[in-house]
Amino acid sequence: MHMSSTLDACFKGAEATATVRDHFTGCHASADLFIAKNELETRAKDLAAEESEIADQRDRLEAERAIDFFDELGSDVVSPKLIPHIQC
Image (cartoon, rainbow, N blue to C red; front, side, top):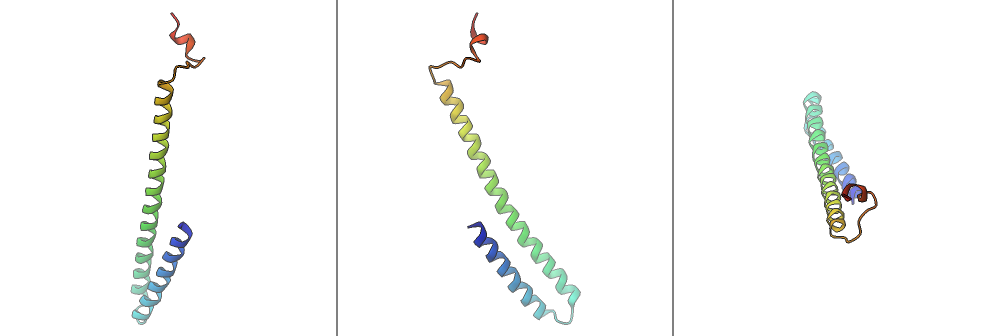
């Protein structure tokens, strides 16, 4: 999925570049600035999607750790590491 979305983004970027260059044939500086801005916006959207995916993975990991912790709390088996701390 990531590969196809990256390819789609590249294709759309190439189309936009071609369109802008056709539109600004007499003014290369403006066209280059417009293209650069467009590429930065595209990259920003890609990074936002990647950050969202990473945040989802982090949330999933924290939830799994919490589940493991509460499962261990509810267990009748006491870890040998805890025995010296709970003996009187």
